[in-house]
Length: 167
Image 1 (cartoon, rainbow, N blue to C red):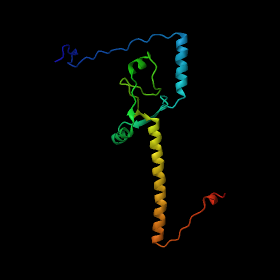
Image 2 (image 1 turned 180 degrees about the horizontal axis):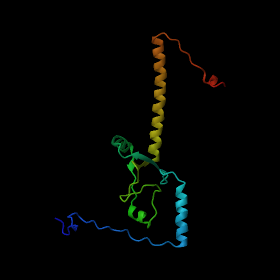
Image 3 (image 1 turned 135 degrees about the vertical axis):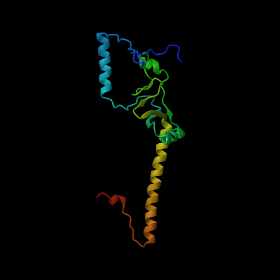
Image 4 (image 1 turned 120 degrees about the horizontal axis):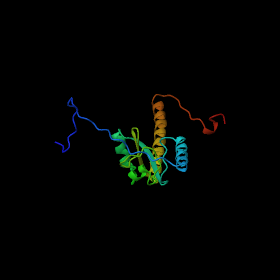
């Protein structure tokens, strides 16, 4: 049993004492102008915009998709964490990464997505691999079409690329 049990109402229900947030300190005119300028600047920005280390690639991943999170982990992505989140949230420090959704634990979460990153060269390699895979799949589809057409005795032809598009 807790040392200080919650007080009971005459009907026997627990009484919940409201706790108010600390009173806000009024801003000076110059502080208010600076704050409004910051807000105006942010209003025109997309919610998912990230400004951080240019040697990193940032990606908003769905938190509920554990298979995708595992895949991202395998290829080198990590969850982005702000090392001094408490100080950043209180306004004592500037964040290392400018993005929406900073939480007390240092992660960036907006709705059902969480911010992740990997090295830019890893991302470039992954995109290059993806392009090569798409090219191979396109060539395989062409080759398969020609083979199947030949099996069924259907004539095929190729158009010179220079003649495509009326050139």
